[in-house]
Length: 124
Image 1 (cartoon, rainbow, N blue to C red):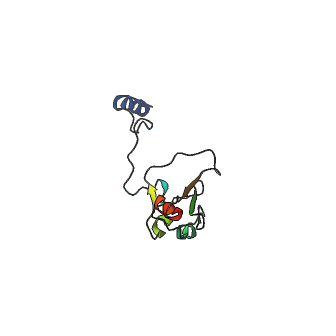
Image 2: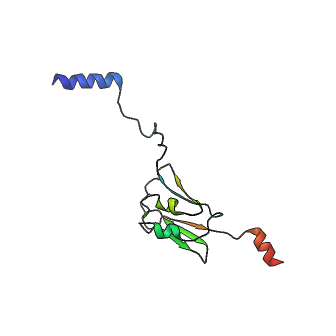
Image 3: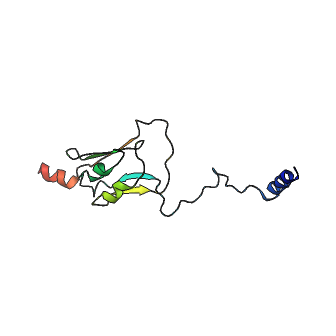
């Protein structure tokens, strides 16, 4: 019983050993994989290699419409798609994403827009 009082007095004197989370956030580690952030649509050739290598089938690539979809709820943050991309246009974020109550609606869609130079050339 005396050991318990000694622990209580020590905790009152020196404070807690843990962080006060919402106010003191831990810095992310150097090689942390927080989540898939997206792609650079300018570099992407929409080859579909990332979708073929994704073990969770979280990525869909449509070559005809130049559309890239990521189902965030399915992504297991394995980094295989980033390593497989031949153009290095997929990138990860070190920060963890906040949890979401909606599982099926978390889809990141990136569509390549036609460039103005190409559109002007077609009009002439």
